[in-house]
Amino acid sequence: MYSVTEQLLAHYDVPGPRYTSYPTADRFVEQFDHDQYTNALSLRREGLSAHALPLSIYIHVPFCESICYYCACNKIITKKYDKAIAYLDLLDKEIELQTNYLGAKQWVSQLHFGGGSPTFLNDDDLHQLMITLRSKFNFTPKAELSIEIDPRTVNPIRLEHLKKLGFNRLSFGVQDFEPAVQAAVHRIQPFSEVKSLMEASRELGFDSINMDLIYGLPKQTSTTFNRTLDQVIALSPDRLAIYAYAHLPGRFKPQRRIVASDLPPANEKLVMLSNALNRLQSEGYVYIGMDHFAKASDSLSQAKSEGRLHRNFQGYSIEPEGDLLAFGVSSIGKVGATYSQNAKTLEQYTDMLEAGLIPVVKGLTLTRDDELRREVIMSIMCQGELDFLSLEKTYGIEVQDFFAAEIVKLSELERQGLLAMREHGFTVTPLGWYFVRAIAMIFDEYLSVEQDQNKFSKII
Image 1 (spheres, rainbow, N blue to C red):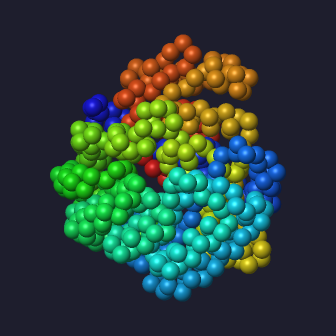
Image 2 (cartoon, rainbow, N blue to C red):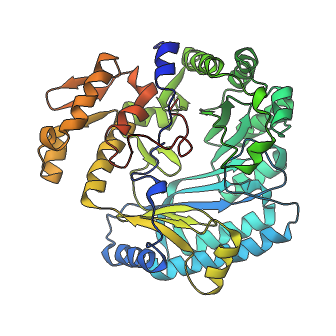
Image 3 (tube, rainbow, N blue to C red):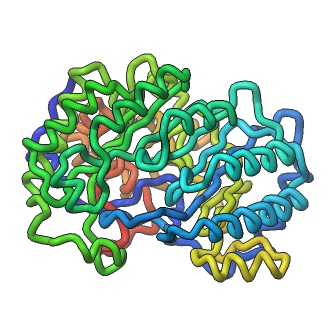
């Protein structure tokens, strides 16, 4: 176990990208639209070989029955289920359009339902959506099928239905178990209810169960967050994500309902994080990177130890980086050397589909420099190292010359103990994994000297 000082945490209490992609989504341009995206799909279809990597699929379900004040996701608050019925028809149209260009029955190794609250959809409609997906794609025998769970919307019977549909991974949105904190963010879900759902999930045999927590919420203190950690550790999820709350009421309207004076001060947030980092490792969790932990027996921990960790728009993954098809409002995908994002509003998403267009409204075609820096950043974020010789062989550059300015900046991080330089590259130290975003940021060509403080979450 490696202890992280509050001084070092405070030094890196700055905003920065999460690098689920490089370049990051804020760099997408509106010149990239339906035509550019369908061209990318066609190129994949024409170049497909027996050795092509299987696809990943992301489905965005934006609906929630009630608002959580901290939320920064793209969501639609409604109790009218007919909106979901109409949305499912649109998803069917989008799936049909994309597979018309891509070709049907391609192999898929990962499927993830996110939101919003995917479990807003009732069992019958989830069943029908899975039928549609299976009619258009082939799923590999060991495909990971995951879904985000709002504990307030499911019961053991519903969990059993998800298992029958083929889902083998669950992610429970918990955030915090303290009643006062739950009331302050308008998300009441007692520990006893989550406990019963976790027990049911174990009995049903799901391969992996993740739990999301947030520190820095209103009414939280280091003492109350420790109590939440006690309860989480007792439930023993396979994976944990512990996110920092970013209070940006100017960007996210629901956050305006949070009383700013109820938010813990920065130093208290650092204590919460420091305690969580040290406690979870003492309980046997492996620190994967950034805000993710997993049990040593989990496939994510094994992938990290074996240098097989990858990263995409869903976060860390054991699957090699292939193409990601994204369906639904605001969803982001990757095909070949392109990124794309769907319309963010349901109205525009609907209009484009009814006009027979895939609802891509912006994206990016990567340059050679983008591809080089993406490989560098993903190597840092996933493998925790950078091999200069490999880069020189692949891209025909002299790393010491091409990245001369970046290498100078690395020396300060080496003095802090975050990385170890070697003759032909460097390795992230165990301490450096806590600040891996800061290391990756050095190679980000798009970051300005004075970063927009409202654009990214804090790196710690």
